[in-house]
Image (cartoon, helix red, strand yellow):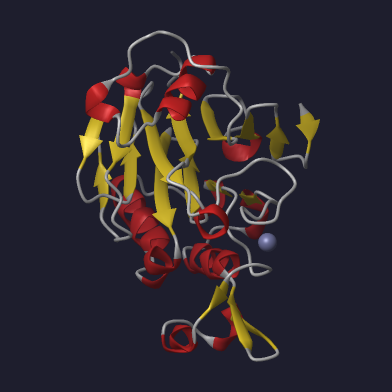
Length: 253
Ligand SMILES: [Zn+2]
C-alpha cells in the first residue's frame, strides 16, 4: 500500500480508512474506479443491477465482500438515516447506522462525500451520503444525533472519515448557493463561486463535538485527483465509487 497519512492508505484497488478503530474491529473502505479485473462469466445479481453495476460487482468479488452482507440505499440526496439490522435495499435512504457485526453499510458516490462514522467503544457504525443537498439538510448532524441517542458515548471517542469528494478547487456553483450556505464555505475567484463541501462537513462534525484529530479526510478531489475516481461532474458517468463501513467483529468475539 502507498502511505497517504497515518489515517488513510491507498491500495491498488481501494482507499482504506485505518483510523476508524485502533484494533481493526471496524473497517472502512472506498473503491477506486475501473480497477477490477475483466468480466468473469458468472451471472450478475439482477435485483441489484441498478445499484451495483457489473464493474462494482467485480470489485466486491475481488475484495471478498459478499453482496449478501450489504445494506444498500436508494439514495435521493435527502436526510433520512435508518438504523438497520439486515442486509438489503432500503428506499429513499441516505444514511445508515448499526451495531451488528458483519453487516456492511454502503453509500455510492461520484463527487458527493460519504461520511463514515465509528463508535469504537460500542462498537457501532454509521455512514451518510453528503453532497450539497445532504449538507444543506445536515445529514451528518442527523446521523450523529441518532447514533448518540442510541449509544451516548463521549464525542471525543468518535472517529470519522470523509471519502474522496469534489473539492473547492473544482466545485463551481451558481449564485443561489449564497442563500444555502454561509460565506465562509463559498470562495470567490473572479466572478465564479466555488463551494467548499469539505469545510461544510467539517463544521457539522465540529458542531457534534467531534475532535478535529479524530477526522480523516481523503486528500483526493474526485474531479482532479491523480488516482482513478468517478466524477459525475467531469464525466457524467453512471458509475459510482463504493464506500463501505463494517464491524468486522464485536468486542470479545
Ligand atoms: Zn479538484
